[in-house]
Length: 441
Ligand code: SF4
Ligand code: SF4
Image (cartoon, rainbow, N blue to C red; front, side):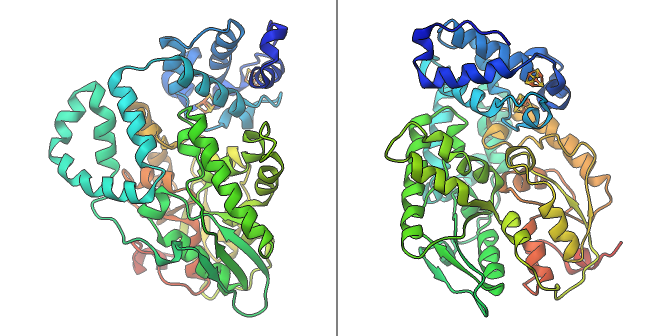
């Protein structure tokens, strides 16, 4: 694509980076076929190619964002299916991240939208605040019907619908410390405790620590870790996202210096995509660029790490039919497609892949709160495809997808690690009955 940026514009490294990305696009439109919003809405401006044109026009003319571009960029899930499809290697992720930061800086949203976004950015990345907010959700539930009728308050209704009726207690394993590996030592890793996942399902990281230590891996929960920054990054709040990134880079750098790390284990693929991008996000910060690149290189999804270990034979051979839902951040963001399925199959599960596996389930960070109508359409489409597999249980590697799919599916939805741990002798995953696990093909 031809671009017309001035030398003065290109002196801004963010604009220069976006210009490089724009020039790679040959407008072929292959990406439209796999874009969930184009497939759902059928509007070229809700396709990757349409958004690329809108972003080019905004940046080239150096103008503030307007209502039209905000509408279409807000509808983008950042699912990155377009990046998997694109034959020209267009880095849509970095382009849309830049556009979102530009929108945040130059566009004044309506008051309620601003308030909703500010509240999400204030609450979600902080486990104590999020836990308190979930407890308060019970007070809002009686007004759900009213919130749903008022378009401006639909995000509040979406939040109330997603909030679980009960919240598990905080996990003691989320506190800083070291969990020694059993038997022959096979590695030393740090684990990201995270934010929303640690509140909604602390058992995911507990199970991960249990399985890794059982396999001889020492697991460190470093002092000072926090939210990875993905949730606010996708809202264009660059300052807050970079502050989170720096905090984690500091925490993991200390852990590296205190005893070395073979990997930084991440159990939510949405976080993994962002942490693997820390090197890019902090490339212009001389104090952090090198450290951030080292952290990104060490970041591994738990299934990516396990697949590289020589796993023993499982204790159980379940034969349970599992529908594997590959989160967009797993398959498109991190290009991890093979490992989770292979691990499940090796552990004795029968793995089935739902039709249209490349399409997002509509969770996408805060998307299911901020764009509830499109999100619900994508969720229902996903659940229909999952249920058509005839599986007894759904496995996936991202807490957002677990919450989203479980809100509509009839079958249990669990993190992949819980099924693996069960096969390797761990406890039965909560919410999955013996009957389901015993259901052989
Ligand atoms: S597939 Fe790639 S090159 Fe083709 S229009 Fe989409 S982004 Fe541009
Ligand atoms: S990130 Fe997903 S929703 Fe956004 S343009 Fe690409 S394919 Fe479409």
